[in-house]
Image (cartoon, rainbow, N blue to C red):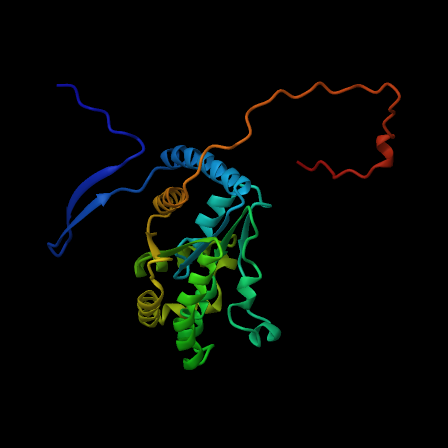
Length: 287
């Protein structure tokens, strides 16, 4: 009987291994190869463009929150989603430390100013959930402010949804071991060193505190109207594909992308004379 060829897109694998101590470990999936990843991503990118056109023409308002531990892969998936989209339709919001003025505002106020207008998608690289995570763990807010956030956040989100906003929340889950590996890579790679901050380093020593904070945050804010969707993120490529595929499944859309068309021939103008190139300043051709 001829053997059936395995699909390149799906990599089911069951490998049984025995450690030196005699324990048995079972690995159910292997990492997706780069070629397979790019092939699947190309298909998903086309669907994202279709979704973009649907959001634009139907004047929808979409908000997607990306939360998780440091180095969990939030920035990577946001970049992957937005790379083929129109930045006038799909915006990325990654706010820094609040100013003194913002500290005196209603907590949700500075985030509300970045919410989408009709026909826009906004991707929040961290969001108002900073208060339930880093601000609480690092004691940047008071206990009263933290408790008030947990009470008011579900109501704030219900209000957004009633106003017509499509709100989607993702939590990227990364293991202690994988986070350590990614931190070490960032430290050693000068192109990625900017990604790790003193705050990230300090968070390593507060792993348990962040775990408790996340559990409590879910207990209060994982509501029916805006549930949390957890993305297993130890495998970056698989996490990106799974997240994008899931995002596409949450918003029903149809293909409204413009159809191919023929470019008209350029009209020639015999009276046009181009200025001398010597009068212009060109970038030196070093390469």
